Structures are given as structure tokens and as C-alpha cells.
Image (cartoon, rainbow, N blue to C red):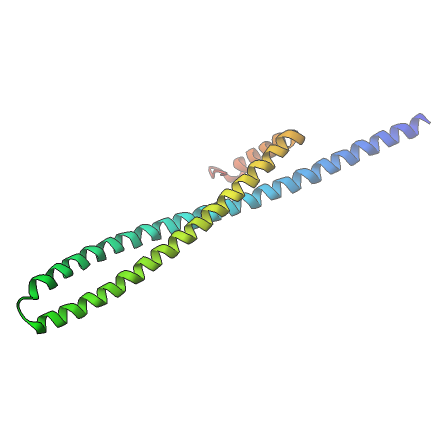
Length: 161
């Protein structure tokens, strides 16, 4: 009878270790996927911010040009009607360009808001996942740290983010 109890205890221990290893692998994979998604979203946000800055600069330049043309049109309105007509056409073309840039900026801002919201949701999920790991399986963090250290040693100078 004692030998059977010992076998049951050994099997239970092996089963528990197997389950812990599976849980650890699943959590590590989820963390890796979430980190990749977060990095991807961060890159998209940075790209969108740069595009927004570029569009804003172009918009400001067009605004300055628009204002200069408007003043030029006002100054030359006294000289001749032919000159007025050509400058007016130029001004109308600039107004159309101005409207297009304003629309592009609005689109970029909207997309930036969406990406920021998505990144925030992913971060919140990752924070909740890590909290659950800390609460229910803190030993997994030690295993993950050990794995990360071994990866860092193998990469010879590359850093794990």
C-alpha cells in the first residue's frame, strides 16, 4: 500500500511540474506576443507623430504663403484687373491645397488617437497579465528572469527589451 501511495505522490508531483511548465510557456508566449504588439504600436505611433509634425509644418508654411498671397492680392488690386485675375486664381489654388492639408491632418490625428487607444489597451492587458502572474504564480517570474538572462548571455551584447 505504501508503494502505491509513493507512486501516486510521484505522479502528482510530475503532473504538477508538467502543468507548471505548460503554464509558464503559455504565459511567456503571451508576454512575447503582447510585447511585439506594443512595440509595433509604438513604432506606428512614432511614425504617425512624425507625419503629423511634417503635415503641421507644411500647413503652417501654406498658411504663411496664403497670407502673403492675400496681402499681395490686396496690394495689387489697385494696379490692374488682369493682374488681379491671375493672382486670384493662384490664391484659389492655394486655398484648395490648404483644405486638403487640413483634411490630411485631421485624418492623421484620428489615426493617432486610435493607435494610442490600442496601445493603452494592450499595455493595460499586459499589466493585468503580469499582476495575475505575480499573484497566482510568482515562481514563473524567476523562471522568466532566468530564461531572459540565458538569452542575454547567448546574444553577446544584444539587449532584451
